Image (cartoon, rainbow, N blue to C red):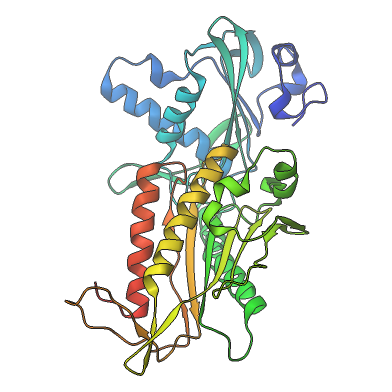
Length: 382
């Protein structure tokens, strides 16, 4: 939606005034006006929880339809914007973080929501939320155990979804796992050669990676100095940034023994391909899996920092694929654990979810879960 021929991020106080008593911007399937954030006005704890639930349901209703905009701090009469009231906010960044935390209870993933704080005067703002059309519908809330709510935006209000709408959306939601699996297999085929050195292909895939509206011009941001990949992925980059149609990659032109190549896609996907170190011990070949886990930890942590720089709170799926290691032994430093032997030539570990890549605790938990899942797939017991 444009106001005064400007996009969402460029709206000012003068642009917002255009909404007042303008029938073109009357509440509809994609526009809603709210005079305040109701949960902030509640002293009663139970009432506050109820209002927080209503806030989540409002977001779900837009994500389950075609997306839209909620304008907070604007009163309305019969669906028409009436007055610019504003919301009192001392710290917009902290305010946004609190609202995003309230949205974390939405399942299966938090919908994509952009925030814009438009100054009115002093500490008063019009807060605009742009809710993107959900690609993994239906988005639902569970406010009490076993009590689920399904809402969709119809006209100027949210309404319960019909059975057929829920059924169709659940069928479409299966596509997320299929899309991720297909992408990983396609990327793996790019690297497959006969008699290849054992290697790992690591992927960090945002839930929105199929949504072209969310594409990020990675190389352009790099050239403009807005993203410093050399700093973000310092230990994982072995060459200069090279643009391509999909984003930017860093080829390995070094003469180091283990090949390593990082690629960052405009879709937000981060990919690392690396050879696995091996060592001959008593006539048997051992994989140096400790190095793999170190690289995996670095990749996830560095990508979390990338998304912090981008200001994007996104659900991520971590995929680890290991190829060409059948018959190799896993090197385990501890003498208390017996080495195990890899029994498959291709291991595609189940993706591990990090619901919010900006949440430090969730990132740490995701790293731990991913390492454990990879060890399990390799047959490592500890």
